[in-house]
Length: 586
Image 1 (spheres, one colour):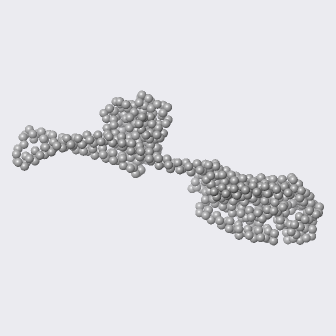
Image 2: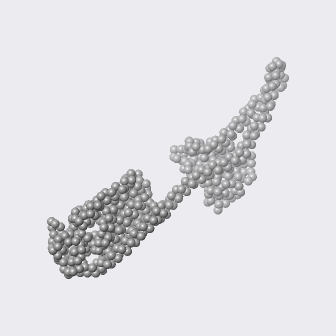
C-alpha cells in the first residue's frame, strides 16, 4: 500500500513538473531579452548560445550584473523593468575586482531560442523522471532502488526547473533544493547498487546531512550575498563531482574484485564504460566552465547525464526484467521444495523397496529358523541320551554312538549356518533400512552389489539366473546406503521385467577413473518412445509402481558426480549403466 502511494505521489509530481515547466517556458516567448539569461541574483546564466549577444560580449558564467542604468546592486525586478522599458540597457558586468560596461540591445525572446534551451532540458529531465517510474515497476525492488529514485527525481526536477531558473524565477528555490540533494543521492547509489557496499550502506544518511548543512547557507545567501553564494555554488559543484568520482571508483572496484558475486561484477561492467565516457566528458567541461570561464552552454551537457540512469536501469532490468528477480526467488524457493521432495522420494522409494524385500526376507529367515527348529529337538535327544548314559554309567550302543558321532557335527554346522544366514539377512536389511547419515565413505561397488544380490535372492531364485563379473576396481567415495538403494531399484526393475524364466547379468569394471556397473536383463524391454521419459518422476511403464525408483536413482547418481543411462529394445531386454568417479577423482 505504501509503495503504491509513493508511486502515485512520484507520478503526480513528475506530471506536475512537466506541465508547469512547459507552461512557464511557453510564457517566456516574446519576453524582453538582453542576449543572455541571468539568475534571479543577476549572475550570468549557464545558457549562452553562440549566436547570442552575451556570447559576443564574452560574458562568463562567473560574471554578475553589478549595475543597471547606473543603479548599483539592482534587484531582479529592476532588471526586468529596465528591459521592458528600453531598447538598449547599459550595465556593468563582472565582479568587484574586475568589471566592464556593456550596452545591451533588447529584443523579444524568439521561439527558437526557447526551444534550443528548454527543449534539451525538457527531454533530458523528463527522461530522468520516466526512468525512475520504470525502475519502480521492477519487482521485487533491486538493491539501491530508493537511492536511484532520489537521484532520478533530483536531477529530473533540476533539469526541468533549469530554464525557469534563468527566466521567470517561479521555481528558483525548488531548483536550489534539488541541487543540494543530487550529490548525496549519487553517493547513496554508489554504496547501494548493485548490492549494499560492505558496511558503508548503513551510513547513507551522512551525505544527506552534509548537504543539508551546506544547503542552509547556500539558500540563505542566494539573494542576500550573491558572491558568497557563488562560493557555496562552487562547493556543491566540487561536492557533486567528488560524489561521481567516488561512484566511479566503487564501480571499478566491484567490477575487478574477484571476491564479488558474478552477477554484481557483470552489472558493474555494464555501468562502467558508459560512466567513464559520460562522466569524463561532463567533468572536464564543467570544470572548464566553472573555473576557466570556458564559454560552453551547460545545457549541451544535459543529454550526457542520461547515460548514468540508463546504464543503471539497464543493469537492473538485465538482472530482473520486470519479474526476473521474482522468478529467481521463485526458482530458489522451488529448488528448496524440490530438494525436500527429492528427500521424500528417496525415503518413499526406500520404504517401497523395504516392503518388497520384507516378504522374501521373512521367507529366508523362516527357512533358516525351520532348520534350527527341526534340528534342535534331535540335538536335545542326543544330549539327553548322552547325559543319561553318563549319569547311569551305562554303555551306549555302539551303533547308536557311531550314528550320533556322525550326525551331531552336521546338525551343529547346519544350525550355525542357518543362524549366520538369518543374522546376515537381518544385518543387511537393517543397514539398508536405517536412516542415512549422508556420510560418504570409500566403498567397493562390487561389495555393494554382492550385498544387494544377497538381499534380493528370494525375488529371483530359482526362476532367474544371475551371472556376476567383478573386475579389479578402485574404491569410490559414496554414501553406501544411497548407492545400495540405486542397485536395489535397478535390480528390482530387471526382475520385474522378466515375466518367466530369464537371466540377469551384472558386471562391475573400471575404465580410467570411472567405475562402471552394468545390469542387463532378458526382460520385455522398453519401447523407444518411452525411453526419453524414463527418468521423469511418477512416470512408470508398470501396472503397479510409484514411478519414483529411476527418478530417485538418477538424482542419487548425479549427486555423486556420476551418470545413469539406459539402453533397451522390446522383446530383447534392457541394459542399465551406472558410472561413478573413483575416490581420487570425485
